[in-house]
Image 1 (cartoon, rainbow, N blue to C red):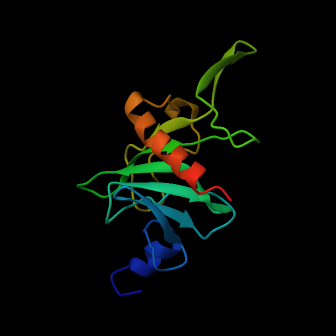
Image 2: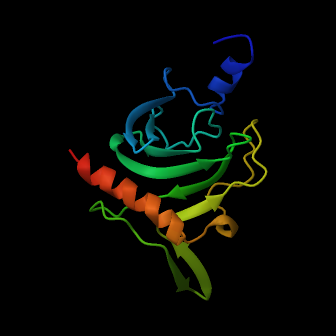
Amino acid sequence: MGGNGASKHYHDYSLDIYSGDRFNQVGTIGNNKVVSSSVNDNTSIPMNSFTSTMYYITSPDNPNQIVAIAFYSGRTHKIVKSIDLIFDKSGNLVPFKEIKRKGKVHKVGTHTHKWPGNKEKGNVGRKAHDKNNFYEPTKADMKFIKKALKYNKEHQK
């Protein structure tokens, strides 16, 4: 994979690889790629993008269902924001909600994360599902979510 360190990044999953066995393009929405991970044990989001400012990411178990949307800096090519699409058992999108349980507020449903301080070495500036970095999607986010839902509907098995 070359002598520029690409092999190392490929193995630590910090580099987009579409022709290898990590991320493969499975479709498009407008000019944006729909990609799927070949790693079936979790849904991963590429940490860097060298070709696009956003990707739609499908579930490794079902390359016809988008489960995340990622946005990248056009200058640094590092992830800056992601949207996690949460579905119920029937396949319906679960909207963002704040639920009060035992005196605490719990955030559930489709949500966004900001990725401040993204670094290539696996420290991407946030902990997985950190409750302090768990936001309701904005109206602008909903435009992308609706496109993902339309894609999912058109590609149902």
